[in-house]
Amino acid sequence: MKKLLTYLFSMEKEPKKGLMAFEWVVIAYLVATQAYIWLMNSMLPNASAITTERMKVLAITLALWGVYRLLPCGLTHLARGTAQVVLLGWWYPDIFELNRIFPNLDHIFASWEQALFGCQPALLFPDAITYPVFSEMMYMGYYSYYVIIAAVLIAIILTKHEDFDRVVTIVLATFFIHYVIFIVLPVTGPQYYYEAVGLDNIANGVFPNLHDYFNHNQTRMTAPGYDNGFFYALIDGVHKSERPVAAFPSSHVSVCVMLMLVAWAYRLKKLFWILLPFAVLLCVSTVYIRAHYVIDALAGLISGTLCFFLLAWLTNKNKPGNRKA
Image 1 (tube, one colour):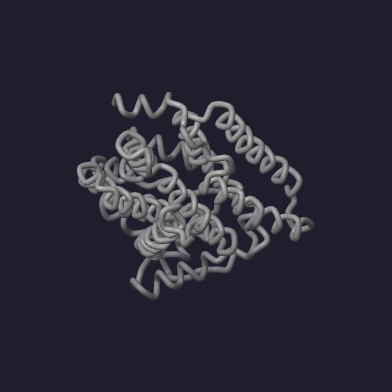
Image 2 (image 1 turned 90 degrees about the vertical axis):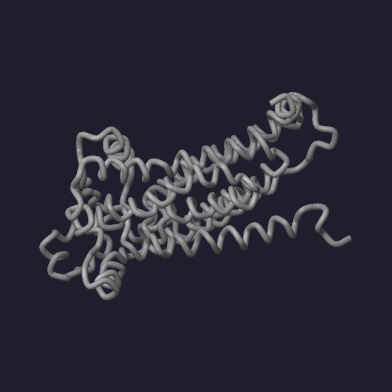
């Protein structure tokens, strides 16, 4: 703890003059998607408001850079990365505005699910196991997503703050890679699609094409499970503020896998084993609460693994000590 406090409040001997790598990741996503907004301006009803909000994110980023330049210490350094992670909560709903020009693809993914499993696991799973304790375990697992993100980043700060920039870069890049996928592949997941087409159609293997239905209709089916549970209420409250977007691949699963690999790679072994049961519950819960098809979760396992190894390689390759003279 003494070492950490010294780092937080001591002035850095060689403060970085420009933006950090993780901030460049944010800027790259902002610029790429803003170019897309300008290109598709006539098809995006809220293009002007989206652009205004993005300029606010840019202003926050530059303001934090300015504070760091005035007071280059560990505290202001960490604040820059932490702020960008917190701002991910703003970027996520922005996807709905950007992918609405593409037709909904749930009918394709539900058909693939049916072809692979002969049924809709997201429809049958929660009805097959109705015990309140099991339901709460599922919703606790899903909520663990936020705990795992916080736990891994806090552990990095407390024990390996010299690796904070690299880890945050991997985390942010993983999120933004998935956000790009979500923009071009509009899949809402079972909780919206099942409600829109009716459970009779789903049970009979009929999966209508809804085209742009979710641009104007955002009704979500009642979440399954024990509705008097504490974690049920937490997740239900979160979902009430969301819109139909971003199911494939499951970013919950992908980010969870990426973070577990971060914990293992950075020798946070105790934390890894503590979080592992919650990570497993999280992956299973995505289907139980009907947020995702099974293929979304499986794709998340793959995409999270690929993101970790690719981004770990890229960030290591670009470390000052590894660059060619």
